[in-house]
Image (tube, rainbow, N blue to C red; front, side):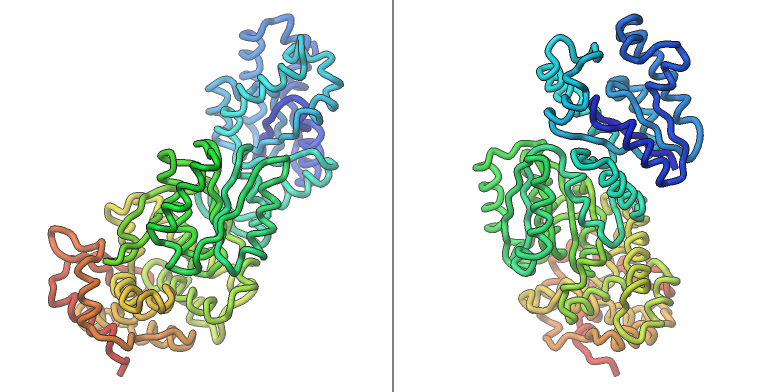
Length: 508
């Protein structure tokens, strides 16, 4: 692993980089020191003697050398990011930004003495450097760390961050991952969206995190469950953002279940044509499925998620610790999405689920959540806008969404998906030679998830007519072929009516 540190002069790149390398057991390189050893003078002197253009040429040579090895921590010069060539070099390694407030930086720099880049007025020049360089720092930096406390504390925080699993682009998994929300929220204001059960719990602690460094952050509490995904709620939030004068550089942070992350994603996608988005899912459904992949949406009376956008989050922090306060019934319900991934995408995941005799915890839960997330993210990477392969993620959702809507959203998403998964397994057994329907049904029953809906098939049919997967060439349906493999097929109205009937028929 190569870790490169970027930031303004005085941010602590050398001191923290040296201690970080020692903690990780890696080599430490300082590009300013390498430049001095190669050209025989300190970097500040070389900057004056050579002029900025030649100095930057030499800096690029040094950076290329520093990044050419393996397993090292590299401290870069404050202006390294100014050159496009340097930013391209940094794309291939893990880049972390270090920052502090201007008075702290000036104190460390002894008021700017011996720093030509800060002459003649260090305080004004530092503000100019921050303004000019920040877009380039943010282009290359994966995350940001404040260095105003003791260096050892910053190092410990970085070590913990690097220990998180990276499941995909911008998706971090691990216990305690939520603590890094402020590392992704930039330097402007943040709007944190959450729902009532979390407003005085997880969300409150994250609000304090977002405010560190004198940043502004406000919380909006939206209705619980699917009631949050309503046009009136959406419009009210847009107007509150406009009233606060939020700009395109400021961040929406959504903390909660799939409904609040769907709403937050669509809000971020549409306000000023797109602002940064951070997701902290706190339910099993959110961590295994809903908060991953960039799909956002709100509901219409005619159906679920009929208005939305594809909009990837800057960061999604999947922290299993946040599930500790989740009621057991909601925890069980969310496992339906994990089972779905096993049935349709990952036979090893399904085998792990089939071995459960009770809802999983500890390492078993971490394995299942991470495995389900990886399976989904692989599909999303291959088909980010759902033009083909990604439709496989809708396994169980065609009937499931209809059940959810028919119930007036009183039935949870997870339980509705369980009904839809059971229905499609039974249909696939009848029509597509799926031989493991009984295994799927048995697992759902063991997890105390429903395998049918006590409703009228005709009511389900009314919602199936408006399903997003209904195109001009007929209906698309995702069917399992064997455990770990599914495919999208075109079906006629008769088959869709059979699906609706099976969803409402008790398992024999």
